[in-house]
Image (cartoon, rainbow, N blue to C red):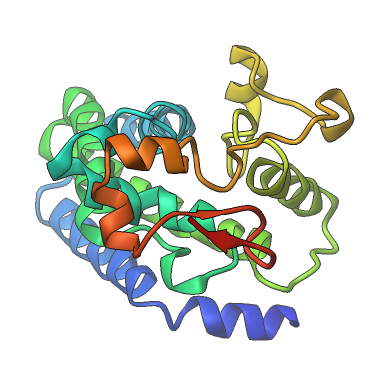
Length: 235
């Protein structure tokens, strides 16, 4: 896949179009009731700095949780937002997050920060920043999962770390574009540091034994599959 083909594919996804449209709305609302320059810049900076931390915490403690599949009314959400993605990391239909989960999360994460710094205008500046940052995250995520080999060393390293998260050990390398918080909280790793492959890298702990006790995700999935996506059996 060439860079041009990657970009064309990226902009065809409805989620990306929705993020861009929502960011345009947020910018228009900012223009209607703007904050002063310094609070605006402060809101943008706060949203930009906080976003990677929010993503790390959500990715580690929510998306990789082993409590959501135990709750009947959360099982389908957990299945959609992350289980399906780890079941087959290259399945493009679930590569992007569902809007009904991502947009509220972005809003909750950055709007209060912006409001505290610059009122309504600051909140809209922060929201637009969060949405556009999400677009960048999703573009990096496309690079990591599609058949594109980045020439940039930074992007290549991002892809290497993220693919290790998906195909070697899911209990680390939770970042997408930065691994600062992984390093700070001790979850950053290189594959030689963990020679043994995680047995739950594709099922996130939702094993056949877990499905016997908490069957809701299995019912939605038509059973539980084990092993590599290309070499698996259904239990």
